[in-house]
Length: 165
Image 1 (cartoon, rainbow, N blue to C red):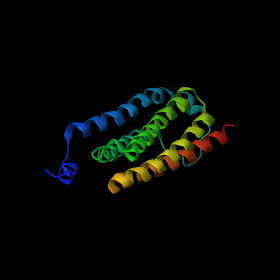
Image 2 (cartoon, rainbow, N blue to C red):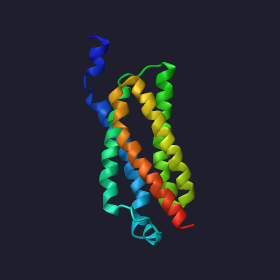
Image 3 (tube, one colour):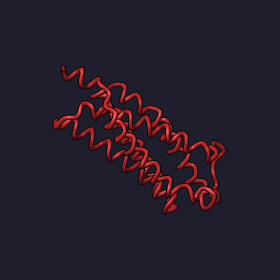
Image 4 (cartoon, rainbow, N blue to C red):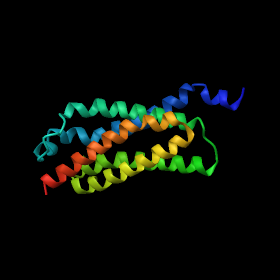
């Protein structure tokens, strides 16, 4: 079997592992988020474009599936080459920042700190798109909805920060 054929062949368990990693991050982050929606978060001044709370779970679930799929597509090209190691590192930094935002915003009630994190997250998503695209163009494209949503979330986070300062 050629290496191209092995790259194209779908591998169920690695894909499931990729899904489990991203969905677990979302699930644990929701642990910090859910209790605060009706409590602390409801007391904040929010801009007119703030979506209703029920929008966030399906959007994030969809995004986590797209992120996991993109990561799986890049994983299929894994190697010990520096370019893969850098790509993997950027990806995990992005996941860490994604996870950290919920803890800082909802868990610690630090809207300003969360704004810094979401701006770093935005930059790390841009880098992830660039580096993923070196391995698989589709993987890079799959992350664009994530970048767009985080762009919106950053504007929302910034608006909440300024409205409540």
